[in-house]
Image (cartoon, rainbow, N blue to C red; front, side, top):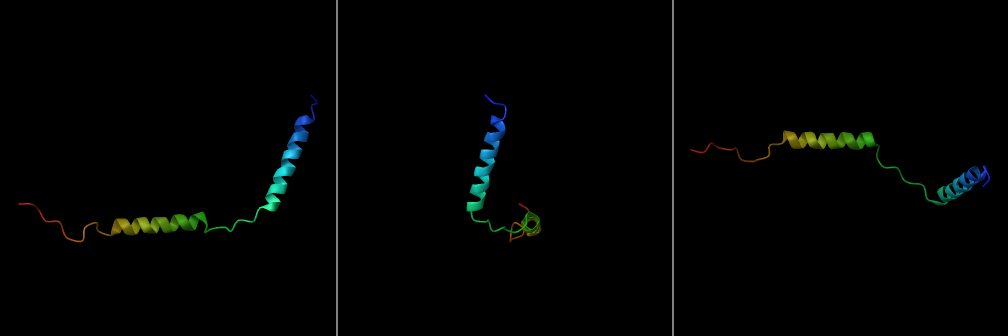
Length: 61
């Protein structure tokens, strides 16, 4: 086996990947991860700040 065969195989594989990347449609980016995380934290904070029970809990006699 030739020593250069690994380099040739790598170049062939890289060329295939470049062709595949060129044929796929570009992805529409979603909102940034920082924005998503921020809104999740706001949602969690609102859930924690809102009382779980609408009626006050009374003591059992």
